[in-house]
Image (cartoon, rainbow, N blue to C red; front, side, top):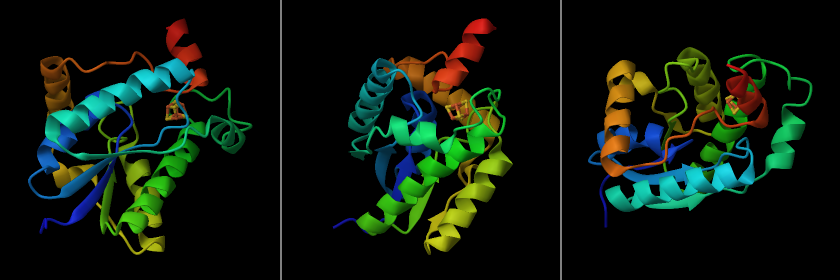
Length: 186
Ligand code: SF4
């Protein structure tokens, strides 16, 4: 039986997941959790899913897929469709994914959870930490912030190197149909 504490690592994509899986694998018994109902279209969701499964095989980690609740996600962000990436739609998107991660942690008896969401330089680390800490407190869990794992810039660079090394799929936009539209306009 493993003596390491259990941790649920919410993974938005394999590229961002690589450095965190690498950094945490010796310290925790990790389950990679792919719950990303924001990702659109479904083919893109599947592509990222396959890459995360590949990551779990490389590091021999447990893997769980959440439901693809894209309609529910659309309902939750209703009214904020025209917001830019980083605007008011994103905290709702983060919250939905982190709530489900905490739910899985409780179900699996894991006392820790964390996420890849803050690793990208485009993402609001403080905002994500605030949402995750609130969810952790409400569920009597421990949230591991990115700063407790390593330096954001170093982790981001390491992730990109590992993704290259393992030939992990690298997406070109954040995930939702609204971010796809704004990214294609750039
Ligand atoms: S831009 Fe990214 S974080 Fe923001 S709502 Fe869309 S998928 Fe979620």
